[in-house]
Length: 462
Image 1 (cartoon, rainbow, N blue to C red):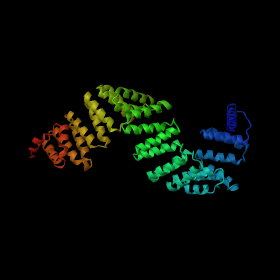
Image 2: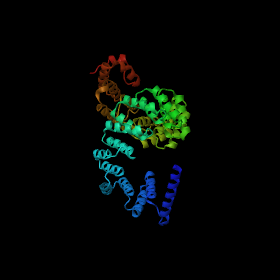
Image 3: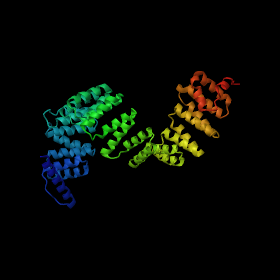
Image 4: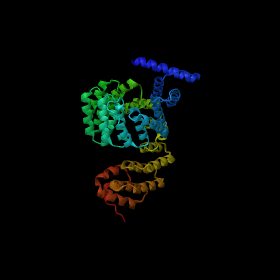
């Protein structure tokens, strides 16, 4: 029966498109026109759907079904007033028609009157062929209102009618996530899987919930069941690989990433993660090959460009490192990590203007932490001649919250020693040591300008 329908549809579509190309007139009955319009709506070709509807209404101006399809097309084009006028005319003669009730609800929804849209949809009888569609639309209207509890109740009813409607399942999970009770989400999915044990989507979503709760072994089992249900389910392989990587089971993670690529061909995410896995194993040349494959698939994958740059930096090929890092910075210039590497490269190449550029960029991005400030202070010591950067760093430190004040005092001491302002340097060093003596050896090792403990204890501020 389905094949007969497909043959009929293919024949009708071919005949209709032939008519348009030859500018001739061919006969179609109203049902045939409906199928043609629905076909174009389903594939998203609104222009041809509109053309077919216009021709159909010229031949069958009193067809309610064709007028309802016209409303659908008008709403897709956001012509709300025209759609509402046609809907009101049909509603006046047939106020109980489920088809027109659904279209009126869509009009109210477009006008952001979601309460009225729900009220209209509730008038559709439970025995109607469109009851399920009405229920799902009510659920979506509640979602528009951020009424997640009512949306969940209605959408669960839908799922009880059709447990293979995964868009409904995903909307239910969205409701649970929005309500914010992860355990309730897990309970719901486990209950659902009791009666639908071969639903790979539910197993996949259950695995993701377990990941959110750091229940990694349970997550691995859930993803494994998803794969048992569908051994070509790429998402489940990827999620398993991510967990295995997190658990430092790198070789197992590699295996899962490779399976995902084997099923559906290369993708930039899996290729990049394979590169990171091989980096962790010390297979640096192999990691590089995967990063290169990543950018072949996705030329704007900034992280891949950065790790290629890091590879060449570690090989002391600083010009190649710089060229690749510039690609990453073109894509995303807001990552401090990239500018820190650029600063290191500039130091190695003795490019003082570019050192200053990178230094200023890091300070302007903000998001400064102790690690970054320590790094910048170390760089300053290598370019002592640039007093302007010293004062820029001091100004940025002044703007920081006081939560890390004790460690910041060690950095301020190092900066002032570097400026030969020993009086200020000693003041900050004494303050740092008084509040955080355990950090002294760490910063003394990092900054040779900070005096040894025996010397420091004998220093006085005049």
